[in-house]
Length: 583
Ligand code: ADP
Ligand code: MG
Image 1 (cartoon, rainbow, N blue to C red):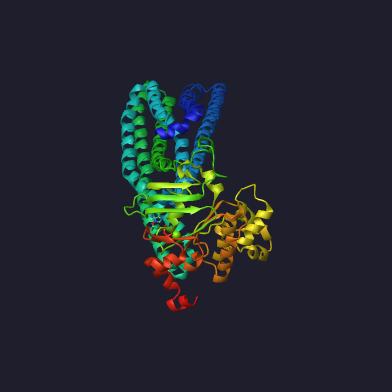
Image 2: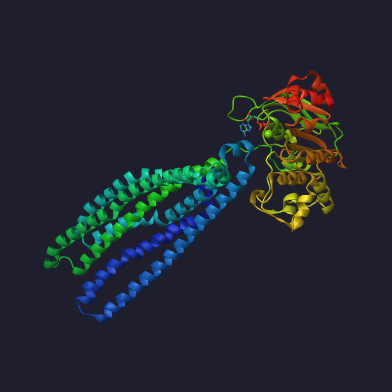
């Protein structure tokens, strides 16, 4: 609640004016039956057309003013609701951008998308209706009751019975439908998640011919939702008939009581009409109130869900550049460019460390190869270097400076990363290579494309560098995507280049050419090359052997081949002994 008020605070004026204007509107509405009464009792009784005309003008004036107030209220309520939603979305988006990798792992994309769209919409609707109704509805209910007492206290006694009965009916129906609405909401979320997953994996589903099963599963989910909706709908449908019966019984009672009094001249006919009008106003307002409660019960959990995202852990090191120590990002004199000292890392929520006691040093301009089976922690190690995750213990130094003292911006300038999963964004080849960096010349781009063996990809495309790229790079093959992401990393001429299994989709000849080109780069960057193929790291100055998060050894190819069992195993599985002997 406090969370929500924080947002509404910015729209204090709107949040106060909207209900206030709604209340003014309500006052005008309450006056209408009184005017009607006098039209009947005075105008019609005396057969005075002039009076009736005057009162009709008053009625129109009341209506127009009421409408004006109502529109004003609607305007303020909508403004507060929409701007709050906009602010919330903005904050959510920037929060999502700041989330640590661990936060992204925990949340997942489809969840974050529903939070930023559906939940925020739900909240916005809730705010809008609350601002409009929370003062107005009780005001009309009690106002109408008081007005009816003013009109005729005796006949108004009926109200004292009807209102509690109406309230009770609404309450009972709400009580049984609210949990149902909550379950419907859950079912809806389920379906959204399932559809999202299906769309992402549509190729896999086709490949395994699972369309029928997926269809059945989807039908099961929708059928379930349908049943829930029907059940809730049937009970909700009782609301109108039951309340109308109660109200009409009330009207009958009012007429019953009033009839005698009209005969006796205690109560005027017009006043009876006014009383029945008040009765139906109360009914309408109670039904609105019930709908409001449904909306609130939908919106409140959404507030909780948005808050949950807002409170997810961020990477604390993402502080702005000026707070960090004066940059030694470039031109540092330390020869050891990357230093790991006894680094251990555990993924949040997992007991087993993904990396344990890792120590090594890489000198400027050298090449470090990292080899190990899948799941041995290779990608994790690279992620620790680029602020993806924070190590659990140990020290990591870049250019002699602790990794925690680096800002993300500095890291991004110093390290060019090629992630294991080659991701391109919708746009053009050029926009993907530049990634918003303005200091990259077309000379740099050409050099990067050449080194990444990606020039032919660009040249084969009709639009060259302006060739459009679809979302996720769908119009490029896996190998093309890999080469373009390599070119993207090289274009900024980073001091350090990290390649995470980046040649896995390349044929051996292209990979060999890539390897040669990387060693020939004019500014001689430090290279960290992760691979499962021994051939990719053979020529490295040092090779780090990982197995199940443990460092099995480090050394040159020759050294490891002589005395490292894990390395021998990997190597000989790829180059059978005889062949290796000939090589
Ligand atoms: P590699 O790149 O060598 O194939 P990874 O570094 O990706 O291996 O994974 C090392 C270990 O960490 C694996 O056991 C994997 O299950 C685990 N792991 C990887 N990513 C995550 C993650 N985001 N959350 C939790 N555990 C993870
Ligand atoms: Mg990996």
